[in-house]
Amino acid sequence: MTMMSRAQTLVARLFFGTLWLMHKKLLWLVLALLAGTVGAAERRFDVSEQPLDQAPAGYFSTVAGTGKPGEWKVIATEVPLAMQALSTNAPNVTKKSVIAQLAEDFTDEHFPMLILGNDTYNDFTLTTRFKIVGGVIEQMAGVAFRVQDEKNYYVVRASALGNNLRFYKMVNGQRGPIIGPEMEMPKGVWHELTVECKGNQIHILLDGTEAMPTLTDNTFSAGRIAFWTKSDSVSYFADTRLVYTPREPLAQGIVRDAMVNHSHLLGLQVFMMAGKPGEPRLVASNQEKEIGQAGRKSDADTIARGTIYYNKEEGSTTVTLPLRDRNGDSVAAVRVKMKSFKGQTEENAILRALPVVKQMQERVPATGDLAD
Image (cartoon, rainbow, N blue to C red; front, side, top):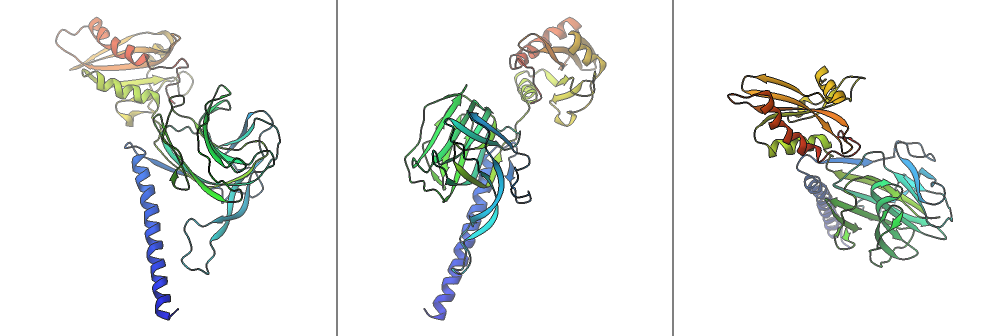
């Protein structure tokens, strides 16, 4: 090889390496934009600053099925670089901190899970790298998502012993239909798994390639995310990142929709006993900057006793009504501000406000947990 050909080779590597990096940055920008027009957020689950040989802080170990929770620890191991080295002499791997499931429990129907914090997500794109290291009974690694609890969740997992990738859901502890292809899944090799959820559609990619047709399921609309293994599988997880649409509190969504559906409304506010004892707080409003403000004694009285309040101002009237959950219990006070007209009476104002609150009540859960 001449000096000129070596230089040309180096230039080519630099050029295509730069293109690859630009492509990857562009891909994540597009994913962030597609995650939602209300403002996508990105989160990286990085354990590089956490002490080795200890359970990762901020994560929660649990188990589905039978047996004890797994042994999840931060360890240091070699991981391939995200992009190939430009020089043939440069290393293609780096040593970094990863999360490992190390317990070797032979219990059947035993699924150690590591919950990635308490946050719940509905629409998201999760990408993580995993490596199946060992196991006698099973050699599996995967991701559980839209997790409600240990008996209700979706999961996609890879099996080195079975050489396959599978998706299924657990509902009340019962496994649903198993979907997924047969494919080579050697242990000791790092793979990249991507799970995209938007509404009731689930899209799964392995190593950047579509792994199965887009799935449609309405069972779970939101939930937590977890690393998942089975029985005595020893598996590692690294480089986990999430692009997601921040969840809107239920009360705020109800207010937004009511303002659209009722043209005579000038304003809508929902107060709950969310502050100091006996002090209501504004939890939803058509003016979002107001959220968090303290309410009045009248709002507390409406919540506690169901009392209706009426106030008239120039050009508008405000009626405060109780908002009840499906059990009939008053959980909030709703201030309904409407355009007034000549001859407006208190009785008429209440009659105009009642359909607004009634429609809102149809979306209140039995728990009355509107602030989530």
